[in-house]
Image (cartoon, rainbow, N blue to C red):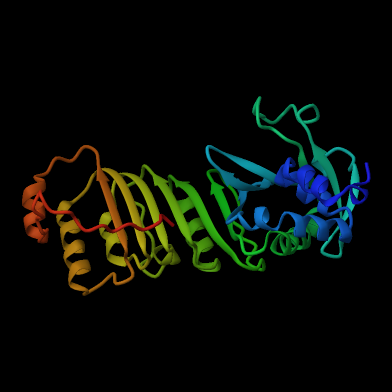
Length: 313
């Protein structure tokens, strides 16, 4: 089938019924095809406002478009020795890259949904060429998808080396991790000191004795989400410099929270903070007394309360 020979109306209908991963792959076939897809699917491509690079900190890296209730994977990267023989080569931002096609039949080791699955390209990556391949693909995304927001989301739940490709343009970095001991904590401190300031950090720990250096970039993240058994709330509340904080614990020292809110309200500290949510599951305390101490304003039940909504980072 030669698409260029079909009328524009037919071309648009064909493209409209293709997944984003299929459009992306087809656009890489030639410059003319890229121009054709970008011009005919301009509105659809512009509707993509978020693209996520997701890695588990090992060798797995995929790129997806968030689409409720699931995600739409558009590409994956694999180390060359772990893939089968490449199916084809494509020129991506002036770099020749080996690819194979991810299909249900050829990937029995991955869980695939029974419905909604569609094939997508897998870039075969040599370790020595990993950064340049990712950069070439990312540059192509910037041109193909336009003004989308890009996130690099890393989940580190094992003994891994922390890495963020800081050379990529227009990318915000996020991470999730579980910390159980001092050794992991030291590694994490070293990671924060050598990394850019992160967009968001999710931290899970069952060790209440762990804490970061007051100067750590952990406290500079725009959003922090922590789950702890016994919250080290003085550290987070005394040093946090970001916009949003979500903290969940079984118990905490409530006076630390009260003092924090007082400083926040008075403008004495935490001027960047927009939103704070603290969930304490086992600790019982009198909400009325706390509200009176903090100085919560009461609103007549018959009046419309003021609205204050912020998108979660």
